[in-house]
Amino acid sequence: MGVPASGHRHRGNACRCPPGERFRGVPVFRQLRPDGQPCAIQVWAAKFAVGQIRRGASTMGSSGGVGPAGSLQELFGRRLRRLRERHGLTQTELGRKVPISQGRIAQFENAKELPTADVVRRLDAVLDADGELVDIWGMAGRGVYWSLADTFREAEEKAIRLYHFANMIPGIVQTEDYARAIITEWYELLGGIDIEESVKARMDRQSLLEKPNPPWLWCVVDEAALHRVVGSRAVMRTQLLRMLDLGTRPRITFQVLPFQQAIPGGFASTIVALMAMPDGRQLAYQEAGLHCGFAANPEEVSSYIAFYDHARARALPPAESADLIRTLIEEQYSDNAQL
Image (tube, rainbow, N blue to C red; front, side, top):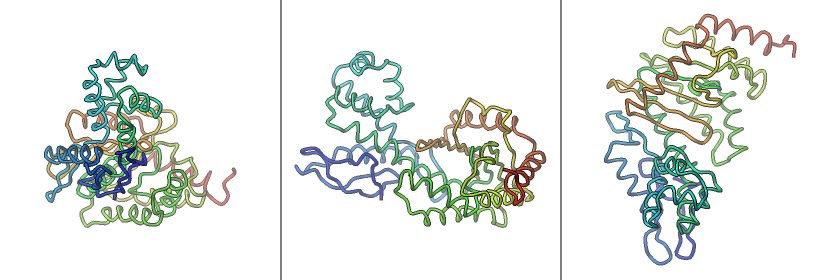
């Protein structure tokens, strides 16, 4: 079931749709408006979903293929462009009315950026959208996160090589207590999830590491993730010990990006995962807060590969990374640690 974060409701003949099904990951609302016409959000979301399916996007077929993930952010951009053109405005003219720059309007329409809440409300008012842009913006900003995260997990199960970069311990190697602490923090801030169900799902992901022929896994972890206490010192100790244990397996490698090295591209908070699929394609997933993206286009994926290559080159070698983890266990997370 998909629930739009915007609290989408009709105004007048606007929508009071209860949440409907997800069609290939896109929330689709099935109810009619009070005047008997289909909900506009329903029509747009359904058309968008069908278009994505026909292009092989945001789907996981029986063969295990994953197409480039579409996004409700693209839907927002297209709707903004159509409303602007319906009013006979250029990007520059619309920008003056908001007011923001023409470049920002272009970023919104090309799905490169989502506007802030204040800007989207002004766009909605200027274009007489009756709340439609606000509603799509709400779904784009939050609802798409869950569908793309699900697509990532499906692809991860079929990948033959996995490469992770994160400023937290990657979910694929988290202990149950570490995962529960992270997920509980999410719940307390944003709600909308079953904590224990989410913990179980994260633990179930790790079964792929226990296969007779598991995927190769290479994780580059920001040093900050080792110092930041998640749950408790005891939870951190167990988590770091698990990393050391997993790192002894022939197909699993950990590297630590030390504080002395910048994250490539200046990213301050991000998760990047690359997946090599059995058919030879490479996929990329990037997540920062509630925003995420999924790429299969070779040109897009190459940017993530370049990011990861730079991160790996700046990181400590595996043996030195293991030594650093052991030192932190002794100095920060042992019973005798001096705090």
